[in-house]
Length: 146
Image (cartoon, rainbow, N blue to C red):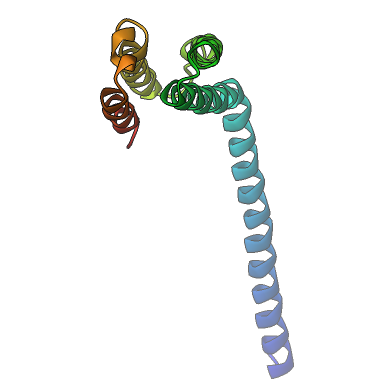
């Protein structure tokens, strides 16, 4: 076999191996992209519900701040509407459990939110004293820290 043919066959084998590796890489990237798309579509409702719950908690925070400033009717109105929004979003998330282990997080949110809600719902006398209210607010914030 001539040297030229040996070199050419070596380059052809190398080009074939490179082509196979390229095709395999494209296949794997498409597979990963499809997996991510399926994961997002399966969890889209939960992601939106979590976003809505965060926004509701921020509104409740504003309501508590209004209570601190002494605007009781507006503060309670904001807290009540935000609570309704949180409960609706939580119901969506609780009914859309698609990933193993997600139930643990849903239960954790339920427990922590109930503890938070009890502080401002069942014991409205807490809000009569500004110092107690500030302490309660800090306790509520610590309940949701990770």
